[in-house]
Image (cartoon, rainbow, N blue to C red):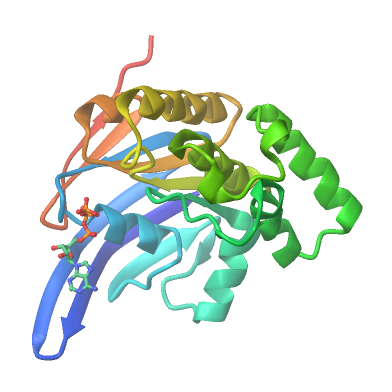
Length: 227
Ligand SMILES: Nc1ncnc2c1ncn2[C@@H]1O[C@H](COP(=O)(O)OP(=O)(O)OP(=O)(O)O)[C@@H](O)[C@H]1O
């Protein structure tokens, strides 16, 4: 589904150049749950934003569902992202001015779904995450766990090819973080392909495969035996 070859990303700030990813190779197949593990500053966000078509690599090749996408223009990348990729963020990424229903509905509006089709899908997601009673609430009225469940609901509303989660438990207590980890595992069991970035080895254990990053390099890749 996603194949990266020799991905390199160099960030230039004036005269200063920082290499944040160097010759990264990664393959993500449909239905996998891949964890990108590494300490702060190792390049996790840079990698998942690049494979999630938010950022462009400086060099290398990136194949997304059969297409080479590393040099696409922003508009083409955003068209592929909409509908194709669901993002789950550490800070939830909700729109403060929209209520729970409207936050989850938003990606469907971008894709021009009819009002009726939007209603059916949003109600399904609200019910799946037991959020129906909160549909009129605004983000500031929610607990952190509820915010993240809304964030996950919005990420899956378009049934994307892949879910990309960047430190999804970073703003949660360990109990709430565990709940989010359970939700992601259950989405993977439902067939969703997941790529999650974390600095926690404990959370990394949830994935089927761990890609370990350090200073922008893949240092190990470990496939768990699933008996
Ligand atoms: N816009 C930028 N300008 C300069 N350096 C940057 C920029 N974005 C990232 N970096 C640097 O690139 C490196 C990788 O950052 P990145 O955010 O990808 O790492 P990370 O593993 O996700 O870290 P964290 O867990 O702290 O979010 C870091 O050294 C960071 O300081």
